[in-house]
Length: 243
Image (tube, rainbow, N blue to C red; front, side):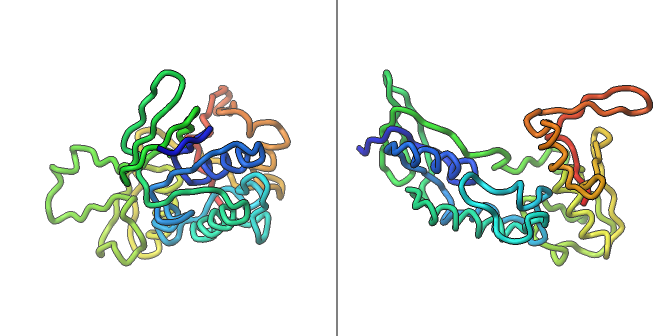
């Protein structure tokens, strides 16, 4: 059994950023990740994916994102950046290892992995992120077999889509980006439960995130928006940023 001060579960941007600070503190730690290499979760996403935050606001602590600071990185650029980040700071990451069980015994934790190894730690940080398992509502089973269905998790590019109109269920950033790509060759309809909050990507020549940063809004989970003379609270996690 291997002992550490901290075991970090998940080697994406959150896990690597935690690793950066743990290494600065010179604490014995290990990052465990089920991917094959740093950035792989980004590489597996659809080909045209572009972040809606510019490079200057997409960097992790200690290492600036290369390229135009006001430009928007692609998913492969993000993957390359995470790999470079891990190599630059020589962060200890064990790949192709899935955590199957986490157990607390008195004042310590045991982390059981798919490789049959057990890691012992004083603290455990879970940095696995969200939305790992594609959600397909039961309604999908009642749709006629002749209608092709594809989850965004499995979408890579327009070549997968058969001829004819397209209905995209969900109008978050992913749905909007895919719709913008498909509308060149298909009639596209976006379906969502509530009217999405749409904000411009830039105001007065400055990126919206620049304004969020200068006004202190980037540290808030929501902002107040005036709509038809009424104030309305907008959750930033539910907002679409149009480039």
